[in-house]
Amino acid sequence: MARPPTAAQRRVVEGADPGTGRLRGTDAQLAALVRLGLAFRHPRPPHDHFLTPAGHRLREAGPEPASAPSAPAPAPAPAGVFAARVGGAEEAPPGASRMREVRDAWQGLMELRRMTNPDGATDRPCGWERTHLVRAAALTLEAAGHQPEHAGTPGYRVRATPQPEAVAVYGPALQPYAATLEAAGWQCGEYTEARTRTRHLLGSPRRV
Image (cartoon, rainbow, N blue to C red):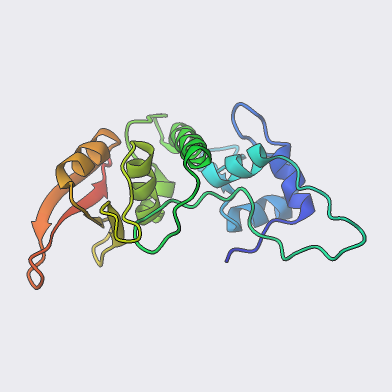
């Protein structure tokens, strides 16, 4: 489990610009937020720092409630950090609250594309997605309304592959999955595994 942000780091996140997600803080604070996956450093000068989708979720969660002084505080969890559902053994989260989380995470990802793609394009994946392929593909599918596989219920499963910049997507409805990913800037092909004869998609982020 990722180490939760400190109180000082949370204050930096909560003080981010509400429109752009631009951060202000010391070099050490900003570097720590990058390591936690809550911020990224813009590749172009002046190399400002901005919130990632996880950082936006943490900021929107608001200040952490104070613990009662008479009882020890429970072990902190990485509150506000969004986790994409890749399909499989994950627990099914509540419906309405999960829909809001997914919507907010998707909006944050579109902002991340706008801020980090050289031409500001939002119709193709950004650098963060290329280094978090499974999570990015799973978020794309869930944001479009597809359901992940869970407890025997059919749905998508997104898995890493040995190929660079490629993920495998399994499930009962490969064509709708492909259409969703392609509309979000991925390129997809359908393949059959030689050993198991299982059909799956191979998806890669489009560069142009």
